[in-house]
Amino acid sequence: MAKSDVKVLGAWPSPFVMRARIALKIKSVEYEFLEENLGSKSELLLKSNPVHKKIPVLIHNDKPVCESLIIVEYVDEAWSSSGPSILPSDPYDRAVARFWAAYVDEKWFPALKSIGSADGAEAKKAAIEQLIEGLVLLEDAFVKCSKGKPFFGGSQIGFLDIAFGCYLGWVRVTEKMNEVKLLDEVKTPGLFKWAERFCADAAVKDVMPETDKLAEFAKVLAKLRASGKWN
Image (cartoon, rainbow, N blue to C red):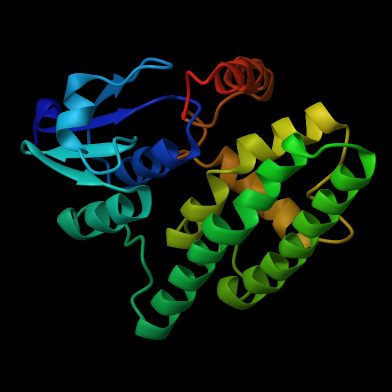
């Protein structure tokens, strides 16, 4: 398939955009990456995602697909004969992976963001404790889902690996900017080693942002949000 047949509208710091890019890499699909500018939305983005007006958007043969995890599932199905399957083949395992992916997005990531916005030392401490409680739950999920293998998806990166792993850059930034250790070898040994494997994987390493670069972006983003120029 020609590279021009597949496009991704996104931005390099976005964990959600990373999901689409990792899925395409796993499936060996070439694509054109169209970087959206900070604080503005392109006409193509507004046309392709008129409901949410957000990245990422996958455009395949001029047809847009929106929402990051929907894109991952679409890529897995559209290129089912190319590369390993991203979603588990077993219906129950698929359901479990989707459950934890929803938990990560709806509960765990908001807790991660709350650390940076916490007002005062006590509030920050409470936010960190809440996040670590979530990591302990995900440690247990990793043990059960991986069944002794390197990833949530087994021998290779799967749906839940992508859903959770895309946030690791922001975990590192949160650790750096708040001088705290979140992924711990003692409390979450499975996740600690999993995170290293995930970031080093060939499908991930080229799209996982460098911590220092992402930290600088986080400062710019905070200023934009404070000025009302980013939503």
